[in-house]
Length: 293
Image 1: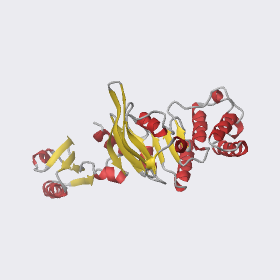
Image 2 (image 1 turned 45 degrees about the vertical axis):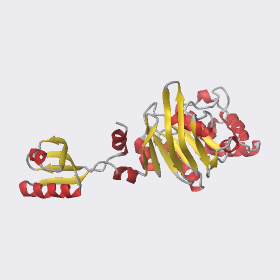
Image 3 (image 1 turned 180 degrees about the horizontal axis):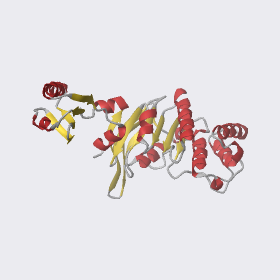
Image 4 (image 1 turned 90 degrees about the horizontal axis):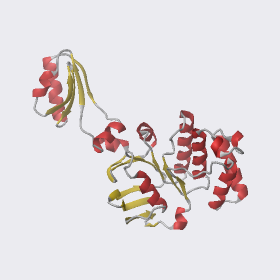
């Protein structure tokens, strides 16, 4: 298990990361979301030891993460790390050797992954000649090449087409199935919602929400959408009901509790024809906007 305890990092007067605490269990895929400048990249750099925290610590199985251990993490940095004027395969072989692989093993594994990601015919091409999406594929291969014990990936899905997203998702699941904890950041909240076992939301350097999608939705405000035959303005006068939005016969409401919601339904049936009465399940994007407001 990878654990973060109270990680804090400042740059001058700016607190970029403020006592960030969460864990990434073995065999779990955790999505790390937040706006630009929220502190995600700084947090990942502290996990990898690229930046030293002002306070707090990174633990692996309950013990402080060492430099040797971190060398076994697969890392995909925000700024990427491949040399544009070198051939793709040569770079991957070199990076595999840095992770302790033999040259032969690194070449075999890199070639296998390049074929898998549709780059089998581009092994001798310089990185700068690849499209941005293919450069991203090569960078992902570099991160997973050395059989890492954990993966720390900063925006790995950026620039990928739908087919590559599916390939990447499958690859990450193979690593979690083997027991590796995986942490990745992304602005694609629908993708995070679909893939992740748990989600951590960072806002202005602080963790403002964390849990499974179901847990985050369970903590969201109780909301119902009501659609009647005639004007729904009378709902504003009901006790225990806050009207979030109302337009003609349709209202979005926040009942104080389920009892208030059922009272609203009984009242609506008595007054009018009810066309729709349904619990509104928020999307991850809506939850994010709520907690990061």
